[in-house]
Picture (tube, rainbow, N blue to C red):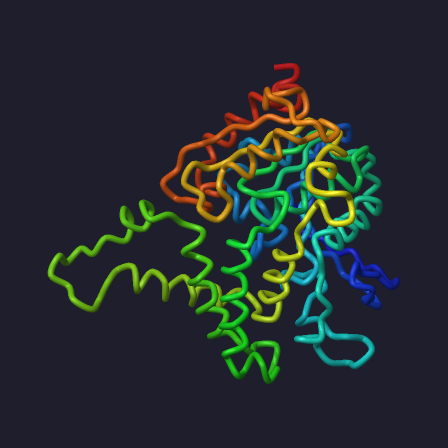
Amino acid sequence: MEKRVLKYNKSFKLESGESLPELEICYHISKDFPKESKVIWITHALTANSDPSEWWNTLVGKGKFFDPRKYTIVCANLLGSCYGSTGPASVNPKTGKPYLLGFPKVTVRDEVNFLELLRNHLGIKNIDLIIGGSVGGYQAIEWSIMYPDVIKNAVFIATGARVTPWETAFNESQRMILYADESFANEESIKGGLKGMGAARTVALISYRSCKGYNSTQQDTDSNSVWEHRASSYQRHQGEKLEKRFNAYSYLEMVNLFDSHNVGRGRGGVEKALAKIKAKVLCIGIDSDILFPWSEQKFIAEHTGCRGKKIKNINNRHGKFIKIKSDFGHDGFLLEYKQIQEAIGKTFKNIFYAGT
């Protein structure tokens, strides 16, 4: 995969009514691929980057299921993130200083229009398969609704059609923790708020895993320990890892992005919005996911492309639902690659096994 940056020197209007005077879109694309190859677009989750061969290396890479030598694979870093695309740490050309808390709130629909800029720049007419998990799934769903003639096939993993109160509760706790860090609230520098972000991440982490997952991997080796617990050191370690690689102001932006999601907004409700999808859709749920219970993916499959009428057989020609097993909750969308690969391969044989 090759890293590139698209500079867009025009104003970009957001759903809120605010505008960004210019943009940079950081993305990765297959370096060597057949000219007529199928286009696979991967939309990434909350704190990932534009190189899926790093964070999804079990599925993306040479010799893997998503082989960049066989397909045109594209993944762009989200607007508001900190891995090369315009975000809070970027310099505001109007002030000459980083945006920080002055960066406008971005919605999932804004992200889709951001990705559309890149698609048009690349001259890609159709996306043969779009795939996204979690917040990546948000983008994939919205793109399939906003531009139904562009997306031919789609995979939505461990995601939903609308943010739930349960998810927002986790997000609000994280925002509260971020602002409790004075270096963040006072905008001391682009590195402000790191400790707050690390603590916020540990709250999110609990929602990403399951009770069984923690109990099976974080059990104390010393059965007589009193205060020093393996789970405690694990939480601290995960918080510190994010502090080293991410930006706290971008983290706030991503959490706010999460809460903006509602495909039914202004469309007469979620069911009517999902009915607009023309793509063949595979929804994959995880049996132990507490953040996005599998019933949310089943719901999407039931209403995809059915023009507002619930179809009794959920495996209709538009939407298909498959539930996979995992002890690791929501993070199973990154870890259960064998089950995910099998589900995608069986559903989209025309893409992956044509001519074999």
